[in-house]
Image (tube, rainbow, N blue to C red; front, side, top):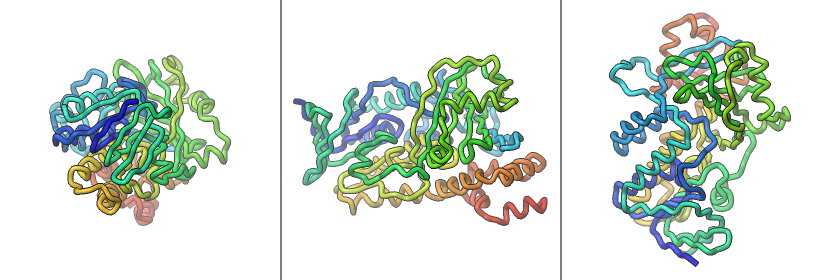
Length: 411
């Protein structure tokens, strides 16, 4: 029997857990980082990294973002193409003013196989971070001053005063100890496939979100990857999947074949990996994400963006905030860790609640079509929508009925 004793145990070495370890390591705080796998390993995901990822890396150490930008396994992304249900596209840069010759890309696209390994290696540069791979923790027992965690057979145990739980959407700790349950209207199912040879990819690596009527409020995506590859997939909210009795793996080729534009673009494309599915716990409602001797991070805290499905940025942001809370705390009681919940939702809730509104908007195809139609003809409106990626006050306009009234009146 092997027993580890540590002040802080991080469960899960994906982006959220690795970020927490990175912050603790830089501060010289000892921690034990545990993962059920060894890295590099695949992770089913859209592979797109938002500007929030870059923001977190720059807060920790700007040189990390520079090293990521130099990785040959990534491509820089400069914006997003929204394709409305009527097939019309709205091209929106992530920033309104960019000099591509001198500015770094606002976002990246990189396979999780490569990105997660990159981030973990950054964390392991610090000697205070101890890494234990291939250890799946399944049993958690509350103790007087923390938790004891163990594998299925109880042959390996960890005694810790604080758990930072970052083991993803299927976290047993979040379910059994954090009280987070799967709710279909706050959960999304997605599938991902890798293709080569998709035609018509954007020269500036804009990601593509196709809001096809039969998928609403979900969407079909195409994200460019290095060397002509593409991450292709679709995601639909779980309650709609049940209501419509959808089989997403069967639906993917049907969407491609049933759309004349997509069919043309995929006619010479080759599927280079099996189609894989995964779950997305959405941050469309507030939940308690800490308690006595624990904090939940990223997908374990159900913080995926309800509109875009992006979760890496929020995982890393919460990893950063959880580590900072751990460093600042004199003890790890529920009352003392409650500041973590407050800080997380102060930083993320305006964005998450707006995304929930946007998710509801796309269930009304004619209104979404209207926004795209008007934006195609109005440079001012295009710039307004682009600013919404940078300015939350601007994004709040999308919640206002007057925004759509003005569109109807051509203002």
